[in-house]
Length: 101
Image (cartoon, rainbow, N blue to C red; front, side, top):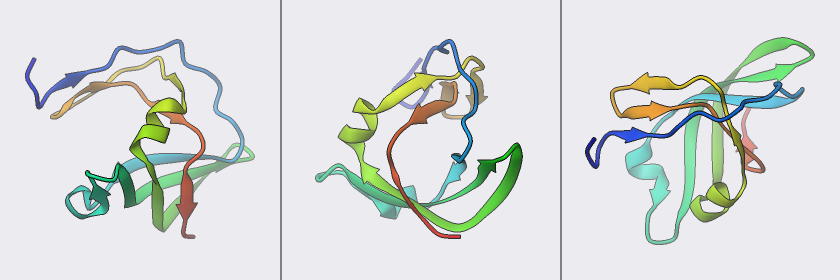
């Protein structure tokens, strides 16, 4: 374990809600985060889950405040995903500002 590899344990998980935005990947982390202010505005790739369908989201941005994001974690998913940067389950957060199509 190092400062560049994180391990977040899984939670109990839950059902996927209608109208949920699933963020697959964030982009421009080097430019979209204002570390001193704690705010972020980042383009992302993801899906809108509505009526049992997954609709691709393109050219969208998610914005918020890191402190608020951490305070508004609803729960952690049950399955842990291993990436080159660490281990983490899906994290359900509400609310965040999302713009795009």
